[in-house]
Image (cartoon, rainbow, N blue to C red; front, side, top):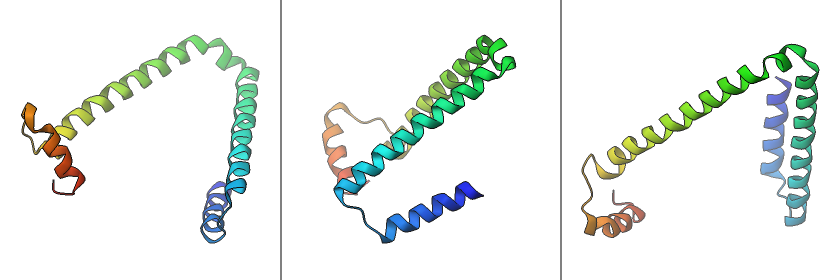
Length: 109
């Protein structure tokens, strides 16, 4: 709950108090530093856990398999959905692709 409250408070503050370009740069560097510290301490926690270290090979294989399947099925879903949404289920003839792109950019499809 604290994390969600902090996020919402930051959104409200960011909405009502616009930042200058310099402040945005500093904010970005602080965010990056925060992520680096977070990753460091997460790594330290994982390294201190003997059970995780013993099973690191199995965990790595499962993680790789999960990410590979997620990427594969995402690409498949995008392929079929883009054909359905952008082409209304029809193949685009080779010479008409540019005209369809222009029509989409105009909001006509």
